[in-house]
Length: 91
Image (cartoon, rainbow, N blue to C red; front, side):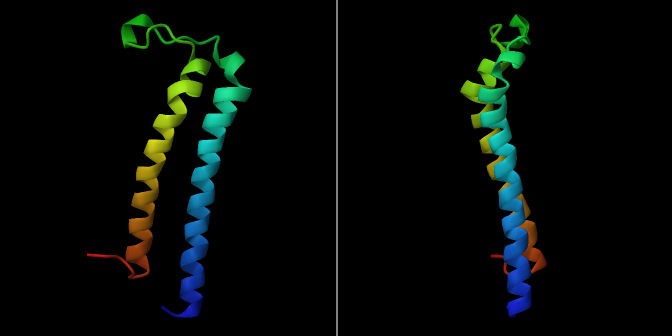
C-alpha cells in the first residue's frame, strides 16, 4: 500500500478506536460512577427480570461490560469494512 493510503487507513482506524473508547468511558465511568446517584432514581421493573435494580448500579455492575462486548463487535464490523475499502482484507 502506498504511504498516503497507509496514513489514511491508520488515521481512520484511530478515529474508530478513539470514538469507541470514548463511548466505553462515558458508559463505564460516567454512568457507572459520576451519574450513578441520579440514575439510581430509575429502577428496572420486577417483570423485566431486572429484579428492581437501580439503573446506576446496573451500569456499574453489568451495563458497562455489555456495552464493551457490543463495542468489540462494532469495531470488528468497522474494521472489516475499512479493510475492504483499502483492499487489505483477508478472505
